Length: 173
Image 1 (tube, rainbow, N blue to C red):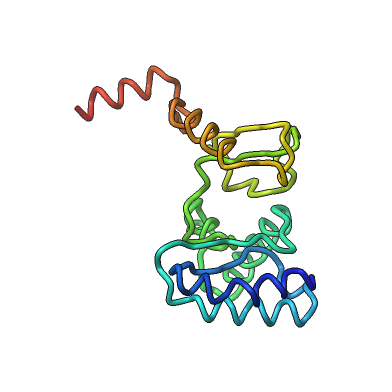
Image 2: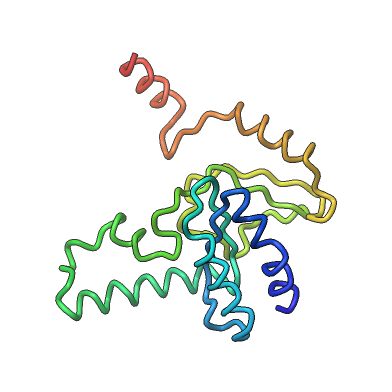
């Protein structure tokens, strides 16, 4: 956690200069107070930035996030703020720590592991996956370009068949 504090201290001026807003997902209340406080200060200092949003997943677990969302909606229902029938996909998504963020289009898994590892399980329902045996420290800009090029060749179907996607495109033309 000391590394996070050091990195945040070092990078905050560049984030502001480059118009990057820092945010986080995860249970930062579980972090040491110094790290959590510095993270919150950096997020406040960069909250006006609008060029890019950098999301740090710290003390994050998708299972934790899903349970937190369920508890939030249950508490809102118990308080009479939301009817049971109003709890739909949109309400659930709004209770996640990623509320307001788009679902990922591409998830690149380094190190050859063929699993999501409790990361964005709800949000990754239609995320395209790329797996490389290269470990993170050795993952280069060229690896990234190659994965983006592969992604650009894929047909995004979002639960439909290829024929349904093509039929939808024909109707829209």
